Length: 294
Image (cartoon, rainbow, N blue to C red; front, side):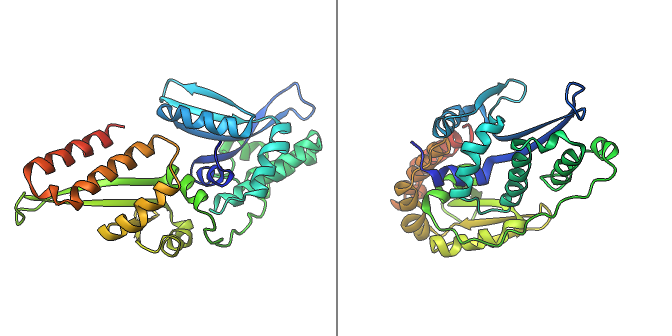
């Protein structure tokens, strides 16, 4: 069974809180409201999604053959009210995604109380939807011209307080990389290095900076063009003493764990200076190639 905070960490990385609003002449207002909690991943991560479904004991998993993805979704108001919301209230999200969750929770409450069946209640849902994720579509703006976007909660930085949360978050947003760069000044004609990183939108810059304190290593790099911020560890001794021991103690649950094990193999070769001879370098290249194909 997955640790509850692993699930929250992974949700901080990969989940979405969606409120779908569509026309439906069968309803009293002429509109249908469908709140959905979902996690969409590459089809290779089906086993992990099944673990998450088993953890919550609600929801469905569907496959999308068009983009080779699998989606775990919970859209029953009852399941959202009795399972999903209690989980995230007890084990809270700590990225800026929490703001969307708080608004989503208000929508679910309105639906649970049947308040959306009145025009005023419907407009309240639309006001909330206008502040979730990317807001309203242009069509919905035309249909609901009196919309006043709800105030979006301010999410103050909550320090990373649990290693299980970080394991889940890294399973979603982390990367274990082997970098091989041409360098004619070296004996082998290249340099080999290891790189562990976690990337987020720059709105979560403080959280990324907090990783430095939590793991006791690394630095933060800002990519202004992409509006992202990246926590990076490249120092060999930090990878040896901080990164690898951490994920050995708090294991990854998805296919990223395979990259982590390959990362360790490359680390062991480099620790024994194998990257400084042709045979060892060839082994590292083979490891790197397999990692890229997963």
